Length: 380
Image 1 (tube, helix red, strand yellow):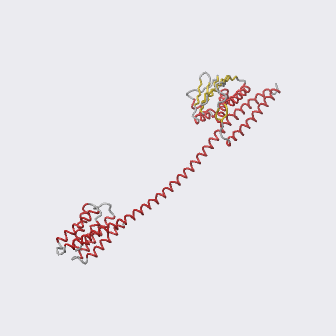
Image 2: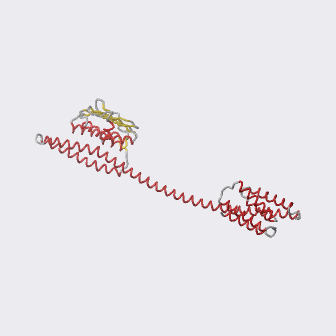
């Protein structure tokens, strides 16, 4: 719009200057009005049609010829659709031709002077428009920088909001993971201990009238187990404030031997085990050790509860990169390929085992072939 206003101002100035040399000022003013209309029309249309351009060139030519001097030919500078140097050549050629044909009384020297003035006028206008264009571009760059700054600030704000949300979700997932670990540890240790304590109390109730001393011994055992369960709960809560550490495989083997011995004492069921294929000095992640002891308790208890097994075989083997626990029994479980998915989904213990193993990138296998067998393999 700024260029359109400037174009109209140039037309008005050229008209006023040419009135002193024009023989038909009324017609010149009409042509000037038409040129201003075309200049305004160009502001609302990105491209001119060929017809409009031809009409505009004819009007400019008539305006330049009627002006009676070199000033009128400056109007060709407004022909923006043509390159600048072509406008200059067009204006100069038409001026020289008109002067030689119509104004024959003009001396050659005067013609040269007016031609030079015409060229200078073109150059000055080019400079003015160049400066305006430079200012417009600078304003545009500043505007773009401002927009880019606002967009960058908005983007940074969105990134900060996303980061806050990601941190919140990470903390939430960490809390959920801690809850899952606590629930698994409580279920594996406390649940089995309380179950064993209940079985011991039931046995003590049966022996109370027959063998009171034996019943008292069983009650003391149950009391110890319940106290141990309480300590397990406290230990599980303390895990929240402790970082994971490594333990020696020898300590894990001792813990599993204790679990097996207590299981045999509580159930009078025979368990054979072989831990010789796991070296005592191998370091194992503390979380893996806690998980494997709980998994051993789960598989022993499930064998009795669901499969009515009375014999178990336990293997613990591994190296510096892997550890594997295998528990087999002679039970009559109905676990098979057709119902394994339902059994796993409905079984809290096995579902927790599979969840932990998958999270750690390990493998868990459960098969029922002449007895139930569970195999768990972890990497570290």
